[in-house]
Image 1 (tube, rainbow, N blue to C red):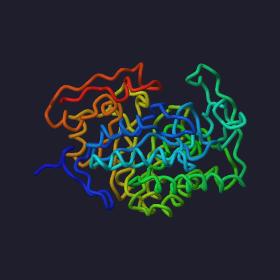
Image 2 (image 1 turned 90 degrees about the vertical axis):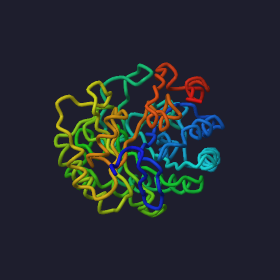
Image 3 (image 1 turned 60 degrees about the vertical axis):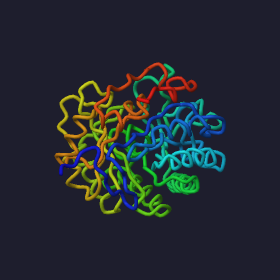
Length: 358
């Protein structure tokens, strides 16, 4: 019997009924005090038939925030809001992880407390514009003495996520945010213990992951990486060596999965034309469950599972527009087209009102 998207799989102590994962997607609909609302709970519960839900990127402190209306997980208020979400998902028989996030240098200064400067590994201004059309500001390089505090922010977020009833957490090490900024030499020009060699540049990612494991146990912690993504003005002089090293060290930590963004379609916003696929190399380096993301559909997702290239496939926009995506793929039913204009911000429209087959 062949293995495909519909096949169950063990993920640590969990049994996933299928291998379709809902990818973390920022939706910018959080209420006051960075707190998820009843509408957030409805949104995730509608999609609980996914083998696993990974909730949207969630800041681990007020200074980790990057954009308006994104959720937090660093005090009791957002913890209580997320508890509504996890209760709703579990009531539908689902499983849900939370993605822990610090945006680092690409934060909008206007959303940070006291109009603080964004922080990063080095004082390098990102090129391009923010989504509001402004130039990015030059971040403040974190002092060596501040690194322990950053790790503690993740540990605190992990504790609140556990208290909120999640089934596990994913460390966000992708997409040009803080941990990715430390990992890649295009954004990390430090000369201390967190810069220079790949071993030093990977140190913060690994220490954060260890801190989160200390809260959750390794069987409930995943990590997301994006080796070739240029999003948020990211690059690295030797991505193969950088990310193979990170994958090997994460494997040694025993995390439950490694989540890799590597587009399989040329028009994907994180595609890097001409780059040789790195996922096969990372699969060899990482002795655990591998999840792939990057524009997959039913056919390409099944092919990746059947060939052994991946154990899980995460879907973003397809789940956004199709709460019952698992059923639609199982029945070869047509899928809803996403409404691009309602992806970020707003109300229930484009959030909880996409039709299901029934």
